[in-house]
Figure 1 (cartoon, rainbow over the protein chains, first blue to last red):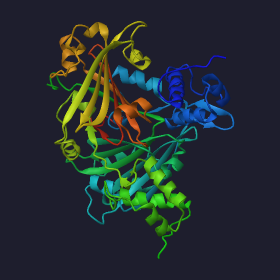
Figure 2 (cartoon, one colour):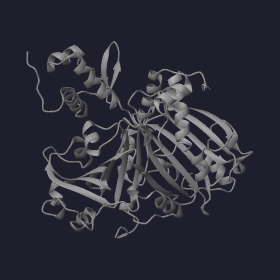
Figure 3 (cartoon, rainbow over the protein chains, first blue to last red):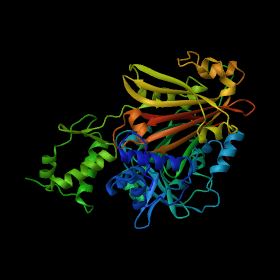
Figure 4 (tube, one colour):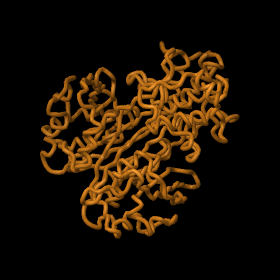
Length: 260
Length: 260
C-alpha cells in the first residue's frame, strides 16, 4: 500500500494542504464527499487524531462541512451579488459588470423578506453617522432576506425619527417604490453615499439569525446616505455572510489624466 | 458578595454577551485588560470551565486577545482605509469621504513594502478574468505592505506576459508613477475596473505571511482592469485582514431619476 508523503510542515497541515489544493483546483467539486477518516489514515499512514486535525482545519477555513455520520463534504458557494451601486443606478455601466451579474446572479431562486419596524434609541455608531443629538430617536426597518427559504442577509435601515414619522417607512411592509423614494418625496433625496465595509466574525446573535456554519465570517456593510446639502438621512447596516455573497463594484475613470 | 445574574441563555454565553456589550459600547476600551478568570468566576458564580468558554468565544469573534500569562485584552482596531477608487481618482468627490479618510487614515505610520516579480502559469481565477489561452503565461508582482513593521496586506498583481515583457513592471522595485501608468504607456490604459470582494477565513499561508491572530477573517479583493476596448489587462488580488482594514467607497447619483 502506497503511503503519500508530502513535505516538511506538520503532517496534519500537509494533509489539509493537499485536500485544500484539490478543492480550490476544482478536482473535488462542491458537494463532493471527502475521503473517509479511515481512508485518509491509510493514505497518509497517520493516526485518527491527525486526520481529525486536518479536517477541523478545513472546517475552520470554511472549505468543507462536517455532516456526521455521513462524513465531510466540500462546501458549495453560490454567492449572491451584493451591488451597493444598484441603489443609484439600476443598470450596470459596463459589459463586464453585465456579464459578471449574469454569471453570479441568484436567478430562479425565490426571494422573501421579513420586515419589522421599531422606534429605538440609536446605537452609538448610527447616532454618530446621522449626527444626532443625545435623546434623538430613530426609526429602524429591520429586514431578514431569504432565498429559497435560506436566510441570506440582515439589513437594518435607520432614519432620524423626525424625518419619517407618519410616513410609509413606519409600516412593516415592503415599499414597492423603495424607502429612498419615500424619503425623496419627504424632501430628502439622497444624492451621495459613503460605503464602509468591515470584515468580522459573527456575533452569536448573527450566527443564530443567519443560520451560519462554523468558520463563516461576515461582512458588515455600513451605508450612509446624504442629501445635496450633505445632511445624512439614512444609515443602513447589512450583515453579509461570507459564504453567500460576493460584493461587487464597477468603476470608471472620470476624465483623462485625473489619476495623475 | 453579589453574584450577577443575567438571562436564559447558557451561562457562558451570557457572560460573553455581557463582556461583548462592554467592549462594543466602549466601556472596555482597546488594550484594556479584562477581569481575570478568578474575578469572573467570583462575579458570576461559575466554574473555571465556564469562564474559559466565554473568553474563548470572544477570542473567536476577534474581540479580545489572549496574552498568557498576563490575561485577556480588548483588541485594538486601527483600521487602514482601503479605497479602490483612489486608482482612478486620487481625491475624494465628497466632503463626507474627506472627513472619513481623515478620521481613519493611518497618519504618521511608516509604510514599507516588499516586492517580488515572477513569471508564472496563471492561477485558474486569474486566467479566466484575463481571458488567457491555455499555455499563456503571466507576470506577477507580489507585494507585502507593512505599516510600522506590521504586515498590513498582500497584493499580487497579474499581467499578461506578452503585454509587459521588457517593461519596468518586470523589475522588483517600486514604480514611482505606478504600474498603471507603465501599462498606459505601453498602449493599455485602464479606463474601467470591476471589483469583487469575497469574505473568507485565511489559509495557513496567509496566517503566516500576515501574522494573523486566531479568529481573524480576511477580505479578498479581486480587481480586473479593462481598456476602452474592454480588454482585461490586469488582475490584482489583495488580501485584507479584517482587523486592520475598512474598505470604503463613495457613490454619487448619476442623473436625476436615474434610479427610477
